[in-house]
Amino acid sequence: MVKLTQKERLLLEDQKKHEEVCIQKYTNYAGQAQDPELKQLFKDYAAQEQQHWNTINQMLNGQVPNLQGQQNQRNTQAAAGQVSQAALQGTMADQNDAALCNDLLMTEKYVSGTYDTAIFEFTDTNMRQALNHIQKEEQQHGEGIFKYMQSRGMYKPK
Image (cartoon, rainbow, N blue to C red):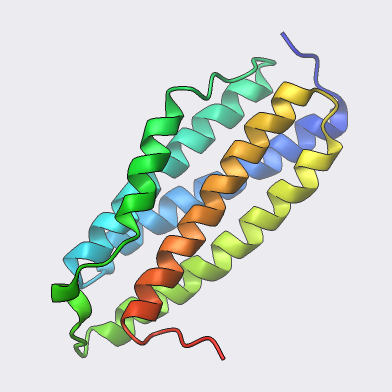
């Protein structure tokens, strides 16, 4: 059992709210996305955000989360970000899907940054590692969205 400082508790409460927003966005956007592959990607990310929310709740209760069981889902998650050749043709629906992706990419950038701050504020090494684990998954979400967008000409780095 870990006794949290007031600052750690406040940071976790913020992260919990961020995870709630991510769950809502991914769930709602899965219903709005036109491309079936993107719908599935959003559903997968929503499930993983729910796992993050559960982990944060454990931490708020002073429990150090067991991250071993989450490793397999993260590996599955990384594969979900890869795109098939059949899905490379653009449609008019791409504009809507691009807008959803842009919003979620900005969200992931923000959330990853807030985890970075929280990690540095935690005194317990295991709690830091749990937050770092979540942050890496948030970054993988951003990478998956980026790769999806780039493969469809929605995002062109210069």
